[in-house]
Amino acid sequence: MTKDQPLIRRVPRRRARRWAVVACAALVIGTTAAAPPAGAAPAPAPPAPPVAPSLPAPTGPYRVGEVPLHLVDRSRPDPWVTGKPSRELMVSVYYPATRTAGHPAAPYMLPGAAAHFDAVTADGYLGLGVPPGRTDWAATVTHAVQGAPVAARRGRLPVLIYSPGLGEPRTWDTTLVEDLASRGYVVVTVDNTYESPEVQFPDGSLATMVTPTDPGAFIDKALAVRVADTRFVLDQLGLLDAGHDPDADGTPLPPGLAGALDLSEVGMFGHSMGGTAAALAMDADPRIRAGIDMDGNLTEYDGTLMPVAEHGLKDPFLLLGKDGSTDTGPGWQAFRAHTPGWTRQLTLRGSEHASFTDAEALVPQLGLPAATRTGDIGTIAPATAVRTTEAYVSAYFGHWLLGRPGRLLTGPSGRYPAMEFVD
Image 1 (tube, rainbow, N blue to C red):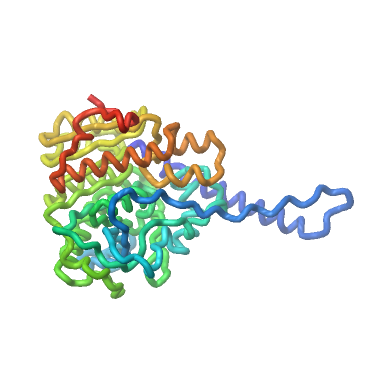
Image 2 (cartoon, one colour):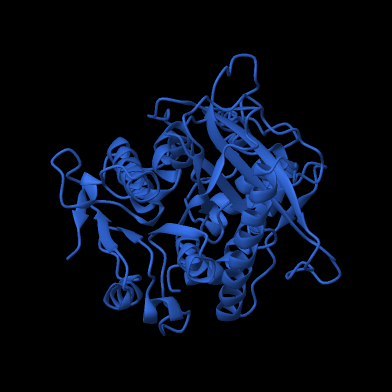
């Protein structure tokens, strides 16, 4: 799981460096409060107000609705925190909506989660090079609204589960999630509490990532917990579709959502370790019929093959990787060699690991140095990366869950030349 190794090893050092910077800043503030001596240089200009970036608009025919749900699994204790008798999760359900006027915009991050993301996650876990205080993540503009009715449809809506990468919140791929919802899917994003960097619950409490001590053991446990969490979420979606509100706090469901879910057509996709989790969850739960791994390893922390790479999957699975990636090579090659089902491997030319997340759309708006931007999201034009990824992910799920011709999956496309098919 080499892609996530630097994250785990760097966190303590980055945190220590950040605390040192804060301490030095406090010392400077304290010593400069007195009047400056004669002839001293003028005080520096106050910092610019934080930027509130926006996400690209979805491309599908539907508007997008969203509802957050607080789910409690009373059948198992929390695996990360001793003494918690139940496993609690926060998920967001995105769906095609109608009559959105008068409904509040869905926040990108709640205030407590946004503050933690700014102070710890963005430059610590994700290593984006974004100075704290530069970005107002809570004010980031999305294109979803809360509580709007589900759009009228001819049949039920296929369901997709999204699993974020290690050190990423469930909101970190909202661009792709909203686009899929605008095309007629119900998309459920999952925060895996205490492994996610920050999870804010309806009472305002904030659960943050436990400190990894043994990286290999942490990753193994996190993946096993993600599989269990995914199966629980699918169970809860069954209750929701049957008309039972699974939310622990009584959040009202949008009109028309109950009875709208086609749980015979379920897909799962994820980024980095979330892509790994998609493969493992498909291997464990036959309800998941199609999956996508976006730049996630199928090898253990020590480099040995995961079982799913040794025997593959019988159902369709797409591997979507960054340009020049060597981390995923052995696991992906083994998976493709051993899988009896349909599989393809694609490479997004000029991309980086974070290009499959909202970093691709948001980083260019943050005023970062060119070298930092390139390190974060590569050299591909951001709009090209976003629209190419959306097109192939939509074509894949449309083919396998909706029965639509997946022409983009048959070979290179002149319309999307940035996507390369790996033989």
